[in-house]
Length: 379
Image 1 (tube, one colour):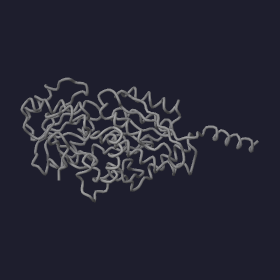
Image 2 (cartoon, rainbow, N blue to C red):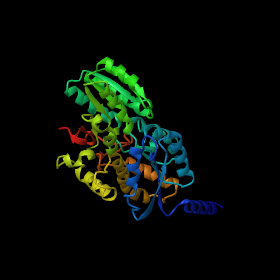
Image 3 (cartoon, one colour):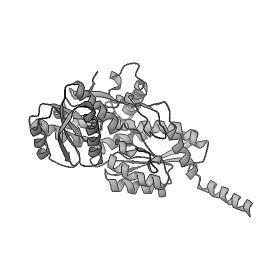
Image 4 (tube, rainbow, N blue to C red):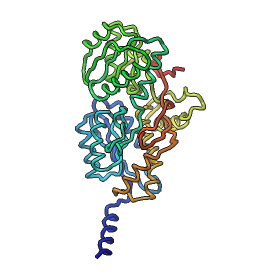
């Protein structure tokens, strides 16, 4: 009887296994976050379809920049497509909502969104969650440090009225205290708002030395253009959430002079020759622009590329322990991701641990400005 039960268990495991690694991807290719999600989707067409001798299939769904759709897509990928790992999604609010599904189904997940709250602290749910973009905490310190060095004493803040904007507000407050900068105005707006005049009037009235806009994608243009219209003459900072060509195209002259932290890939050609990420970044840029055209590069697509680099390291390790399509493989894949050490990628060098599911350090950020309609490295 015992022998029969063991045979049955082995048969069940074998029947659950599948002859390929399935990667479920959720990104925002429509809606307010589309300028971020489209290059992410495009990048998956550049990733290898065989890793460690095993076929890899990428199943990509659009969440329309909507949290409910992101969760629905995540459940579909797990229950119907039987994916071994989830990648996505583009925005912080939707990524946070996907965590419950990843933890409930014990499926590893790599987020493409920024907030530190997606991965920290590593509790029972976030045990399954990793991410590739720099956190708001890592980038906020770079901004406040730059402000401090350039004589900024007072700061006005306006950010999205959601988890992205709130996350930035929290980190800005933390580092403003550290660098002795006083926050004199604090405003919010929605990603789909057509006007922020009321909020900008309050910011201008507070007369801050600088204003930080805690927003991403093309919706981040509106506060800066309105500040210009109202004659604001102080420094204007943006977050790394605007580092793509669509922001430059839509913003035009209105975003000239903006200062922001960004992943080093944004200005790869301007990096020192000994930069640890320069060669990897240029390799991605060549591959992307060969397929999608000169000047089409995007730091957001590079976040997806870096997730692909993680898979290329982790999948062969997991395949030594279990077969794709099984709970054992998903657990082995999670463990392999957490064991990532010294992985040189486009945005930085990843060193994961049980307490750090991002693993990037200060090498993953540079300060840039917008000059002549292009990105310029600040030295």
